[in-house]
Length: 68
Image (cartoon, rainbow, N blue to C red; front, side):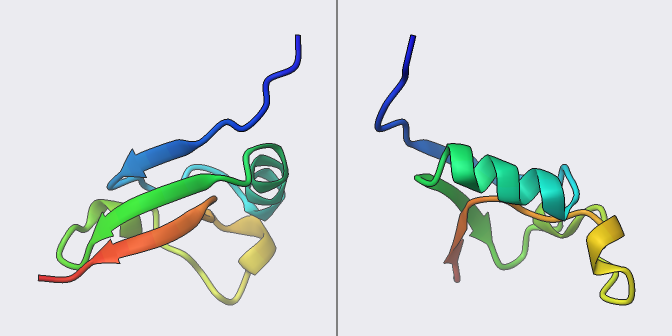
């Protein structure tokens, strides 16, 4: 069974996988959007460590930020 044209939207999603997971997810579901709010702390968890980018948590999908 093949699924086509799947779109996914999440709200306030934390980082849940490493860069390899994020790349794989984006390849499988390219139409994924993350709705975030500037004052919500959840999308910033767990913290991202720029010194070890391949071993830290990453987001997948495209971010749509709501500013208010």
